[in-house]
Length: 224
Ligand SMILES: O=C(CO)[C@H](O)[C@H](O)COP(=O)(O)O
Image (cartoon, rainbow, N blue to C red; front, side):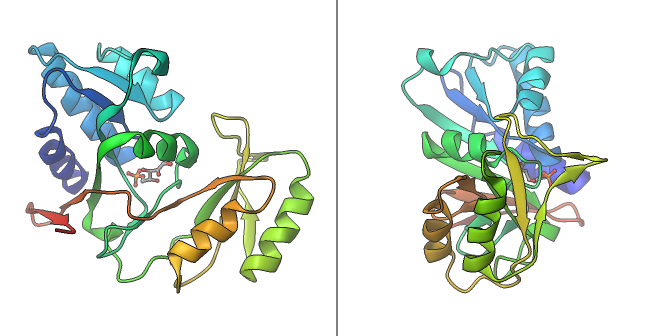
């Protein structure tokens, strides 16, 4: 918990009054939303958009002003977690099932800051099963296409005895790929399959990764 929180607290230092802020999803983003909420109470004046119903509900509890997308032109900064991050700042996201909204918000953001504890740092993406969001219609056909492309074990995500549903009422297929050779090509190939809405590869999207370590230190990784 502490390593997630220190990364989140460092990232929230970049949030300034007047900004439109994207709020991420997950247990690390939770700490960023808490830190933003604390600053709002002491005068930080921002507008926010959320990447999930859960994060929006938390933001509202903390009196962070949530605005509709129709009210904003772009997003200044988004702070979000990740399931894996490599040394080129590419990431796998979607462990919490919010990858579609997270990618839409990240793509509209001037700056995406990924926050993570040290366990998320990898040399190569793919040990974490890649989440792919698919529409329920024709799921069997879409899974056959995924199996043909990926040739790896696929799991249609379940919670308890039910299929997991995203905030967009879609399913998640977790793809147990192992080390990904060419993430750019894979990202494109997955999104070409009809029925696939989006996948959890965030390639060349993050401007910065802030990592919290178990010894209490924080490191910022950038590509520049
Ligand atoms: O992509 C996400 C949700 O869809 C999360 O950011 C990712 O799963 C990391 O979560 P956590 O901070 O709880 O480890």
